[in-house]
Length: 288
Ligand SMILES: Cc1cc2nc3c(=O)[nH]c(=O)nc-3n(C[C@H](O)[C@H](O)[C@H](O)COP(=O)(O)OP(=O)(O)OC[C@H]3O[C@@H](n4cnc5c(N)ncnc54)[C@H](O)[C@@H]3O)c2cc1C
Image (cartoon, rainbow, N blue to C red; front, side):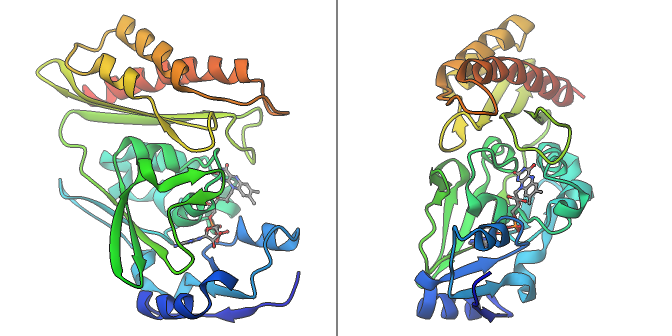
């Protein structure tokens, strides 16, 4: 590990001042489960590490009935996994958090770190895309909001500038008769990354699908929405046949690569299976 300076800001403003001075040489540290291995193996060599643990605003989950959810960027996967506010109307977020690493990893790993590291396989991204969350980003000019679907720009790339930080995620309340699920496939049960991940969210009204959202992970450089599949469901009663058709349309949007973890063909098969399964569960949960 190379030597680096450490800064411990205790507010978002203090953090932004540090980034304004040394942004291009700095890396923010949340749980460190992505950053520290990358520093140890020399992929990243920041001269300054800015530890976010002293900033209370980024460590809170706030949710109220029907008003939506605000998740601080430095909230851990474990906190999301067990939070009653998250497990209620936003169960797919808790499900994705529960799949990250092991219990020890989840006690450190944060949602902001997962998103800002921007691995195509990041588990916490698809449910946030499917729930139409917005990233609240603070920078020198104030705060801006970016829909999660537009947050990622490439493998390990996001819309964040070096002088900006992710502060929180704002998740709109899905409303009544809405349900979602996140599933992924991994060859091993734990401590493995998604070969494919799929999040689905369905909202029903008067017996038909009022809104469908389907987000895919690990089949493109960035998480993808399967919009044609979504549109095939909206305005219709959700039947097994329509779910099967939506799963086929989701396959069409996937752009998977072949690597040591799975062939492109296997990944397309997984998109079909996981889309069908998550839509079926989302329908059941929305019907409760
Ligand atoms: C053994 C092991 C198993 C893992 N398993 C999984 C898995 O199953 N699924 C999965 O998705 N991931 C997995 N990971 C990856 C990792 O744990 C997650 O991506 C985790 O959520 C990263 O969060 P962190 O807080 O540790 O991020 P950090 O390592 O602290 O930061 C990651 C990156 O994000 C930046 N960053 C952090 N917070 C902010 C912010 N607020 N604003 C701007 N930039 C920020 C950092 O500068 C850094 O570049 C695993 C890692 C390990 C070591």
